[in-house]
Length: 169
Image (cartoon, rainbow, N blue to C red):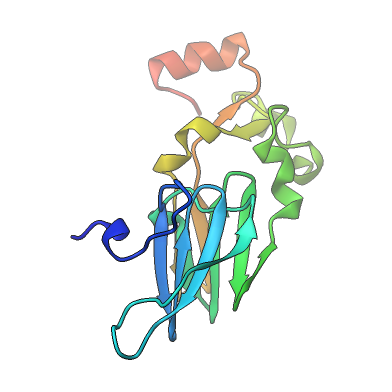
């Protein structure tokens, strides 16, 4: 393995969190930016890297996922699609999970109260632990997935007792 900074110099002081080669271009991700550069045919390296998104980045290289002809990645506030030299958020319905208050009740209406009794709901993404997140694409089911570190915004006595004994139902 070779460190990415030997081939990609962003001159911004930002740490590269992921690299993606696609066609004749190279995408470099940091926690708060996405850069793009075209490869030089002579040197085989990107000629120059230009920022295509500011305030949006990728949390880890395991969170860049390709499938169905599209590239998606996880940022600190949701999931984004990469299309050429543009970036678009696609997880607006899940925005609540990325706040301190957690996911709103809307998506959970179909679950009964008995199913949710032992769950520390509503859920929120643990942003300090996003380095452990990962994603993938299941071609058989045509499904993108991400595994995110989450926690509940409250703990009741039942959940705390069950969780401490490893018998959450």
